[in-house]
Image 1 (tube, rainbow, N blue to C red):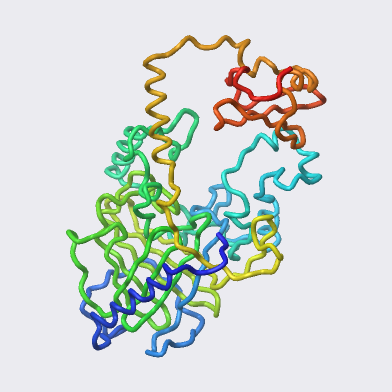
Image 2 (image 1 turned 30 degrees about the horizontal axis):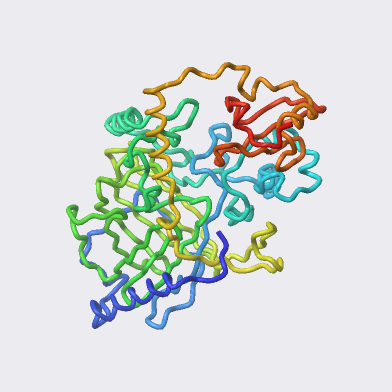
Length: 454
């Protein structure tokens, strides 16, 4: 997401890192090849060495500091139909991006495209527009983020992991016609950790929006602040891991330098951290308990780092696997929506504090709705006859609908918009050739539509 300035949070995090250095590191501890107190886990995947020599910090470490964005359209797994094809040509990639279209809701601009829109086009509601998710991506022509195994596909899960996944899906069944992420909400534990503003997965793949990482360095330390929820302060001095009983939501991380590449190993995640949620690298319900994660931050240019993640857990997968997302520093974006950069001048990607709890009414609202739904089932009143529902109006003319409901609140191409008595539901009427052909929602009582009835 684009913003005007960094908030106090980033500055405060920098101060925290500085205090850690001042308070804990009275004398800078050795890093890099001298950090030998840890027995590091050998990586089963050979990560390419850095091809670029970045500038140095005042204390001599490679300088990777800055705001890095990983916005990408590359899927985690390679589509099976592509077989061994690892990359697209520039022309193929351009066609894929063009085929995605504009993610701005079709009638936000009330332009010619809106006037000529079809019913099917306007009946597709999107959750986020270009204010949240830009259509400009960090260049990457690969067919999958997964680099290992070679087929670009996730390795098979073990029988115990499949049993865990099945038990999770049984406890959190998808809604009718929904996906695994579309579950029935009856309790606050039905929400994933990110929705509860506790933690996103770490590591994570593309977040979709708010996808930047703010990397800061001080002698003997690296701090990585994800734009969503997570912040890690990682020592580089070779101190041992804390041990399994001290693990956290983001695990226990230790780092070192291999030439110009920053390597971070993370162990001892809390057993409560599990798959699913934004940027997920594991399926819903899969615990991180036995994960060992090795991250490589490989500089390949002044504004490009290739971020490799190797995941090792023989209790979950039949073999280790690794993925890579390219990060771009200080990306300059152009905003074309009416709520973006008002003067149209490109500006660098900047981040704000991710104030997850502020204004987060979702949990309370949906839990109340679930409670009301259960109460309604217990004290169900006879269903309205079909003749009293808006779907019974299909086939009527524009004149008849206007006579019934009055002037609509908005006319957007073939879609008329009315409000309802509840104040929270919007009623849409779709017309083709002057006739009503579709209504949303279909089971709304006719007398709930608010309009200047005659």
